[in-house]
Image (cartoon, rainbow, N blue to C red; front, side, top):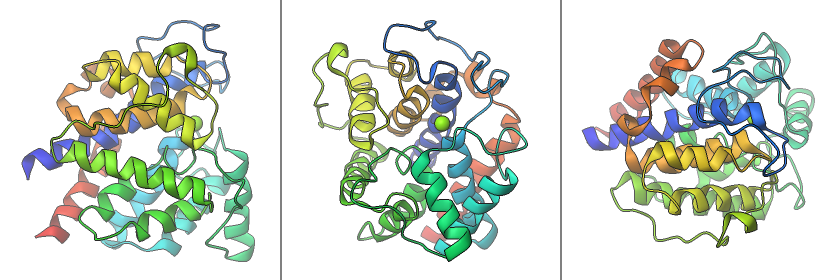
Length: 280
Ligand SMILES: [Mg+2]
């Protein structure tokens, strides 16, 4: 059990450090950016080093709801998304930023229409998998992925994204249980990796970096330095690799560089403890 706790913690913290490390070179092309190996400020968002973006904020919104209510509540998670978008709840700045188009449309639909399924078949961005860790923790041990699909459908109601969610859940389950995934990336080389914000390619880019390396640190450096949607590629890599290598494999210098890391750590640890309370 202690081992699973460490894997959950590695998965959630992996998301956060991946987002923070990758954010400064987001929107660059593959080899047209500074090579990142430590937390640096982000010029695009005018944030100091260690400030997270939407990926982490949305994950925190899911986790905060679960910790406060001690149970899964889709409407409450949806309400937290509104608090984030309109009030900056769990943003690293005083307002939400780096908000994806589909997510913006969806959260407005939640707020103004009460809609809990938002998007169309064409809504295939990586917004669901970038924020995935707390949903995975809540759903761990369930016989199906209904909860994972519901949370995903809040912003990305498409079969392509639900399929990507299922694949990510299966990889994370293998890793939490101690097996290294045998899933091979569709990309055979760095040159082939698609660095767009498409959910399918983001998961495959993260898988490419995971398969190409043997530790968390060098893998995340490979992942974020792909550029493109580097913060979300980093966040997805961080979850996959953190679930495999565990929390202790994440460089402490990265963890401690995250803004208010003790507060972040408390939310993450409490999320895991609530889950373990349920599993008893
Ligand atoms: Mg982001």
